[in-house]
View 1 (cartoon, rainbow, N blue to C red):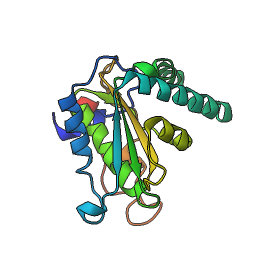
View 2 (cartoon, rainbow, N blue to C red):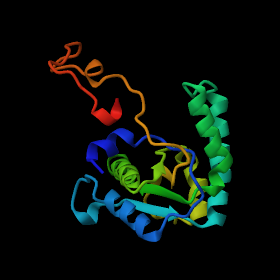
View 3 (cartoon, rainbow, N blue to C red):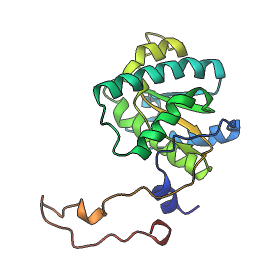
Length: 206
């Protein structure tokens, strides 16, 4: 698959089939993730990832997910821009226990945001290349200590949860998410100066 098609079509996919993800596919996704940019030598890469496929563990995390989402919507009732997004979020809310794969990214305070985030996004891209949908979310991180207890993360591990990736074969179709043209949200050299170029989407994105 062309790299630009992967980049353009990797969007939030929250409607996922319960079909299991083969172990060798999980291995490729995570291995692609740890190739993401990271400062320092190999032994300084303190990120850790938990790949959950166990149904009982997923059910416990599902309870935490629903609690976190309900609390967020109570604080921000207008969170979703449209009914389509709201419906997609509700589907994951109602079917979280059926998600076949959840990857949770941990990292140290201070450095985690600069390493784990990049690794997790690379995993989303790798999942797309494998025909899998994913959603990058920090929702479970709002209840990190409770998630840690479910996963058995030691108190002295020196890391905290930064992001979670529900992953599975999508129920919907791939597509390009609507966005403002790149040249309309970019300045050249100084704020307010339009760039001398115009971005043109590739044929598959039109």
